[in-house]
Length: 115
Length: 117
Image (cartoon, rainbow over all chains, first blue to last red):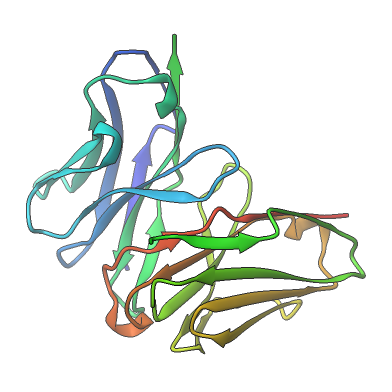
């Protein structure tokens, strides 16, 4: 079964600084990878998705992620953090084993942006 | 329109109450999902419906009873819940049926915050 590991349950950056949220995957087949964001007391919103069409994936709100097969990573970045980026971020993989469209989520990373 | 709506936004119920959560999507999606999310945790899959039929039940206790009356609507009936069932309940949908939709984006609703007293 596929899985993802998010390194760092909390990340704190200053406004204007680089955002880097780490995600490593485990998959025996080319994976479908996702980043979702969850603002306080809200549902999950898709930031971006990797489907093997391109290794650098651009998403909404200035976020992007790069798929690196050699490192089994799919880290999320944003060049300049805004206060509005403060939220919880989940990396997820589509489990292609026994199940159909089952999402397996990482534990999540809470991003704090300091003014 | 990529919107999934859920009602109510908040729900407080006693352990002897019966209540229902409602989820609706008008994107023509054929798969719909219920997730449970405890505080500071990722969502956990509960149920999946494809073409209004239950495809997956992730060993959820029978006090949770899902229902899919039509292709746009998904309900979760609650009865005799326990305080540990307090959580955010999320609904999601994706375009194709469960088995053939591997890798498809799931679109989430805003959730219902449930408190069981």
